[in-house]
Amino acid sequence: MIDFHTHTFLSDGEVCPAELVQRAKGKGYTVLGITDHVDLTNIDWIIPRLVKFCEQINKVEDKIKVIPGVELTHLPPSLIASMAKEARQKGAKLILVHGETIVEPVSPGTNEAALKANIDILAHPGNITEEEVKLAAKRGIYLEISARKGHSLTNGRVAMLARKYGAKLVLGSDAHAPEDLITLDQGKRILQGAGLFSLEIEEVFKNAQELEEKITNEKK
Ligand SMILES: [Zn+2]
Ligand SMILES: [Zn+2]
Image (cartoon, rainbow, N blue to C red; front, side, top):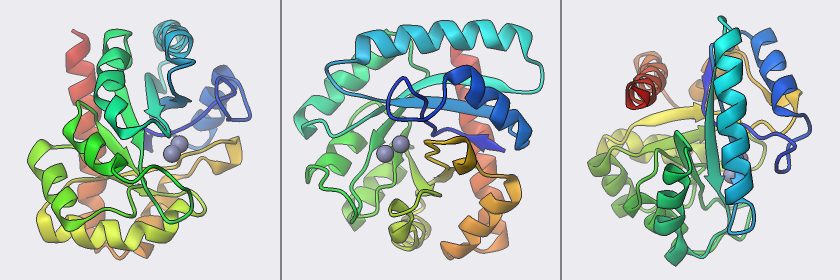
């Protein structure tokens, strides 16, 4: 399983990064992105800690690779592009933006601002418009199918519009606790539940590999 969206107690997750890695290994993960929530208050201390942690863990773990990232969360849309830039400069290899769904009052305009910024994944973007999906396809930004309660209510719309406009999808657990991590089998069922056909499900897993390779090559 490749999962680019998880949280630890560096933000609002339940366990420390080291435990999340062990729990993920237990679920058969091969790649784990740790993407704690950041805003203006904590971007400068979360990223360096995750970068250092991942560097050291990746030297000693051979079954799992850990990637340091962030989820830019509840920012005013006008700050998203500059914060994404800052996150990259500070060493985040994976930049997610906490998108607009029907379960949280994320600022309107967040999805659009995120898709114009230098980010990798727009997380749970359920309230997305058709124009925004076209922009995601054009800019090569992945749209997330979410395993998280609440955010997953709008997976169907994301899947349907991604198919219509050729945007690429990835699956994210958005785990805040170890039990939220998903197995490959659960992942397949969630994608199926979002309305994807078998070949499209394979495509989602291929997209994850492609993004993982892109991140690895950037490091060199
Ligand atoms: Zn989120
Ligand atoms: Zn999240």
